[in-house]
Length: 221
Image (tube, rainbow, N blue to C red):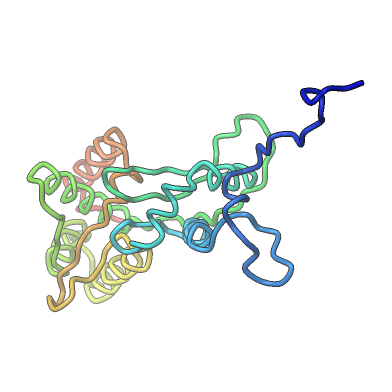
């Protein structure tokens, strides 16, 4: 006969901690993440980034449920890039080697002026970081920098300025520039740029564009 020590007990529950603490949010909801963590995941997928200052409610949820969110992203062949000090994160395609995988993220090629502008902003960000300050830039500064790359023999100055203004708007649209309230024409550079461009890439692009400045001021802009 079995004694008291032989009584069968339910196995210990090793379920996902997120599943244990969450409840269904709507009829038919089979998700396990709590609301703010789901919103953080959606923000990462919709892009371009999740910023601790702009998304003050989502950042703590991302940190708390990081492991589960990374698992969800891995299911889609994506990986999380996160910098705790900068409080910024974004998603990119995972390096799957020779494995044939679908591409989920949209890739938007940069025009010449857009890449010139991003490199300039990345430099401002690095300088500001050394001083322990926020990176702030004025619209006129950006226009003047891009003007350095206008071909010397260009006869469509208005067209060049239009493309330069469009480059600024595209960078703003991708949340790499944020307008400063109460300060017309001034913007803060997003720390995300530090993650998008490595020091090696910055050095390589800088050499390329410096060579262009000495060769017709960047024809093809």
